[in-house]
Structure formats: structure tokens, C-alpha cells
Image (cartoon, rainbow, N blue to C red; front, top):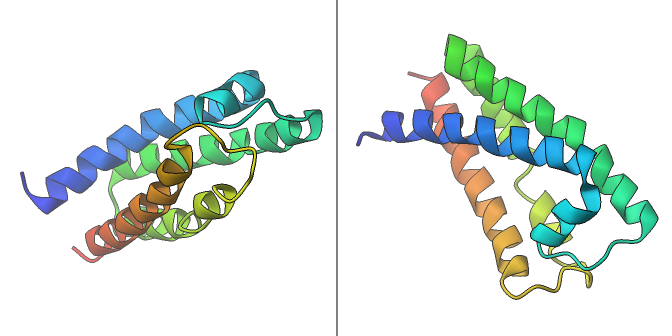
Length: 127
């Protein structure tokens, strides 16, 4: 598998991931937080998490547009979009409410994944 093929496959997977995450955050924020390793959230934490749902749905739309159109500007926009997420999950991992074994590591690795996607999509934008 070529690097380009792997990045395009990752992009398609991120459509589904962000669509599922965004929808779940809006429809069932408490359950979604639990799946992600968070303790029972306070009402304000659940509402703050729910607020992120439309953000992730926007990410899904951006990934879908790049998959469908594949223009240089689409990949460049995705590189910037994923770049905005490099540190967010690592910051969240510091919350004492993230307590499920492996959840903190998973959130930190999400930052690594976002860094890799940002670099990869930037590379695709220059091809």
C-alpha cells in the first residue's frame, strides 16, 4: 500500500469516525463520555461535550469533501483542521474524570494521530 492510498483510506475512515462521534456527542453525551473513559459527567460537563458534536460533524464534512473532490485546497484545509486537534485530547487526558484504564493513553495517542494526519494531508495537498 502506498502512502497516498493509506492517507486516502484514513481520510475515509475519519468521515465515519467523526460522523459517529459528533452524532453520539449530540444525542447521548453522557454515554459517549463513558465509552471514551470518562467518569459520570456533571451536567455542565455533559453539555460542554455535547457542544463539540457540531464541531466533529464539521470535521466529517471536511473529510467527505476531500474524499469526493480531492483538490489541493481540500487536503490543505484538512491538514490545518487536524492540526487544530493535535493538543486538545492530550489536554483532556489530564482531567481527573478520565479514569478508565488506557483512556489517558488513548487520548494522548489521538494527538499523535492528529499530528500524523495533519502532516500527511499537507503532503497530499502538494501532490
